[in-house]
Length: 277
Length: 143
Image 1 (spheres, each protein chain N blue to C red):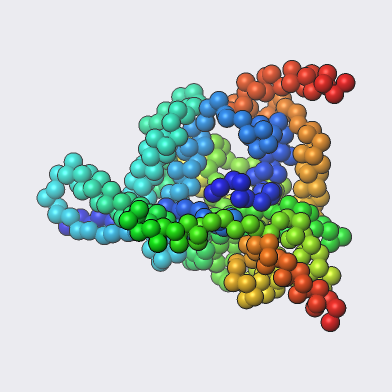
Image 2 (image 1 turned 30 degrees about the horizontal axis):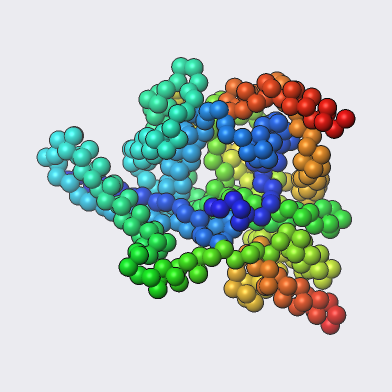
């Protein structure tokens, strides 16, 4: 996609990165557009795994549940192609292309094993663009864009599903606090009100020796939708004021490709102050 | 008899259309002899996958890049893919404000836009279409 033709927008991941992960990382990546020093293998892995699950979902939509062996073989192939495409990637300790290939094959097989035959795949990769409207009816200028992994139906209930791979099992309270279900269910109420979609599910597979598969269903209220828009307003103010700072004890620092720029951040700040004075 | 099922899918953006993608997918099923050795099976998988992948790439290229020997098609393609200036965020916000005053929900507004202009939603409108929609909403307001 040509970035110059894309309107300014928010997405769940952009809001989450700015507000919950690290505002400085957000700025380096999305505003100043620095080239990251490296690409963490976890990102390449996530891409290959996600594309594998897309294929599984497309097959399921056509009424076919792929065999675990076939899906794992596809992951293997996509993973190797992803590595070729990404060039030099940064592996964590005790990790290399082969160990991750094995892990991905096992995770893929784990997902297939847990396929629910009662569940119908309705849509895969549904893109959206919706306005952010606050409680008073004020429309924010930037819309919110995103893509739902899939929409499924089980026993008459439609559920938005997002696939996640995680280094460890999720804490039980994470789904209730996560911004993504809020963003996607908000979208569903605006775009598909007649479908009465009230549930969002995370399908989480752990990147462990023996992968585990867990589903977390959650829902959101109108209050939480309004809170999302309020957060987007704050995010807008942060960007307008260029109020970015390092999240010093962030869990994501190890995989961040902007560590060099981050270390020198205070010098850049000094320059800005002295120029302004 | 072994059954080999191979598929390849690729998503590409639609030129000139924001937040859009077209998905190309090809799949083929073959039966292989049980007598094949593992490395021969592997070779057939590789060969078949390569064939399917090439078929998808060819299909995409045939849709997006006409050959130089087809100047008319090329010109038409360039014209078709020339980025249209999309409605600005300010225009869309104004449309939404007007729709809000009329208590017109987004889903209905998108349906109207689809019927009137043949685009997926308000964010797919170009500037002229957005202006026309503003006029139409104002008229509705006045009526």
